[in-house]
Amino acid sequence: MKILRLLAFSAVLAMAASCATSKDIVYFQDIDDVQLKALTTEYEAVIKKDDRLSIVVSGPDKVVTAPYNLTLGELGTGASTNSDPDKATLSYLVDSDGNIDFPILGVIHVEGMTRNQLVDYLTAEIGKDVKDPIVYVSFRNYKITILGEVRSPGTYTIDSEKINILQALGRAGDLQLTAQREGILLIREVDGVQQHYTIDLKKSDILESPYFYLQQNDVIVVPPSATRVATATAATGIWSVVLSSITTCATLITLIVKL
Picture (cartoon, rainbow, N blue to C red):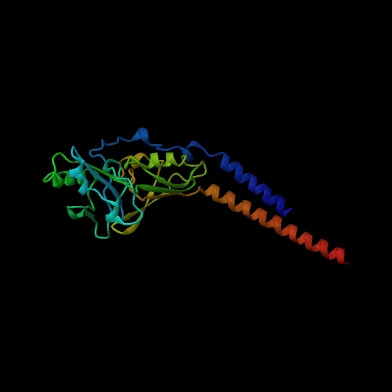
């Protein structure tokens, strides 16, 4: 009887989960009731410590610009053998002081710069000795991690260097119906300290939030809904009772046979 009661309770929980209303799962439920402000600035990722940057210097005369590009001899093992600076795959690691050691120019403090700001700085400095230099800068480690109640959890490499939380969840296959929309956790490192923020996707104010656009190495954790937790707990309890009953029956049968 106890097992039957547990099975009935589990069935009720499953039905409750399947009967979730649009109020439980729809994003931005107040979108028609608010006036969103126009974004005054475009988000740009800033360079942080431990970032890896790909920097390539080119121009009309590649012989002149070659010394401004990394070579295997400068990095030692683990670097690419590609000798064409336009296709270079070597990267600079931003050290604990926020610096990189750049050929010819020496140590440069890049922490806090955007990609475009670093391009402008290098173009100006190299342009003092090289005519019409062309500088390419890109992030090599722009990744985000998405865990929890999404269809495809994992770590994703971002090519565009700009992604918002909706696009990120889209890459992970969107939230499961069993996900908690109002309790999404964003974990971000700020000045060497791990910080966390709670995001409510039922409300449209996230569109104006400083956490709408993600930064490199952000971690998003999507928790399960209370119904999902209750259902899983009930199912675990049922299986425990069933296994216990099977073990008890097997023991009794063994004793009876021996008698």
